[in-house]
Length: 317
Image 1 (tube, helix red, strand yellow):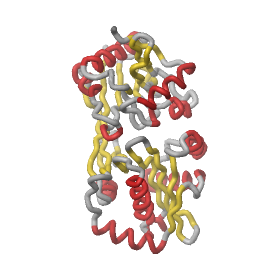
Image 2 (cartoon, one colour):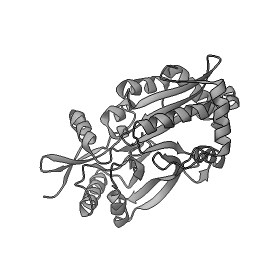
Image 3 (tube, helix red, strand yellow):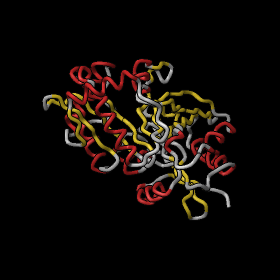
Image 4 (cartoon, helix red, strand yellow):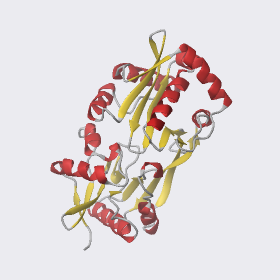
């Protein structure tokens, strides 16, 4: 039986999330519980793929907020992509992606941007979608680089990180979730403004809301020096990957190497949880064309290796 596709409707939110729970390549970022925090910020263009009456795949997507001719999977997430339960492989993946492209073309869109799921997040190899995009003539339009630790085969930390950790453990205290989201957000906002002239993607209220929705997956780990918060890391954890969504430190935090103590605690707990990877996140600027070499080196010194975050562009005309 051939696939058919229908646009997502809010009445299908629970069914969508139940499907993600059993999918091979879904994370919390694919769920409606996560995506709905945007509260109408985007024109949703998500799709549900059906074989008969059974859901066999979902595709989170929305119209690009600055380009009404482009649909993106997904503009409000680090990555998007086709989520499936093992049925949309090989030629079926090509059928699914072609069906989605045709649906968007009929809505008047001329471009489809596909933010592929990095391979580490899937339960099993699931990159049939990338092969389908190749067959359809898509181009790789952007590539970011993340530093990621394979927890079962971790490379040794650098001598510099070992020395920094010894100092940090004398000077700071690490705690989980007790700093409070407003305090963590303030550290993040100050750090981004000071170093990059930027603001956090999420507000303090949004982070607190997401923590309430995903209390076991979205966590904050903080360090204090003389009872004063000096560093914080916000985690967005999935089934196989613990991910540092935000990393922030004050000047005192840098002097005391507070982040070394935080990451040591996170990596230890991630290993105990039997996660496969700890992902520090990307270190890029200018849409991937520039690598912040100092930041990437800092992350890699904990024993990480490179993972690509790929963006594909498909001309729907």
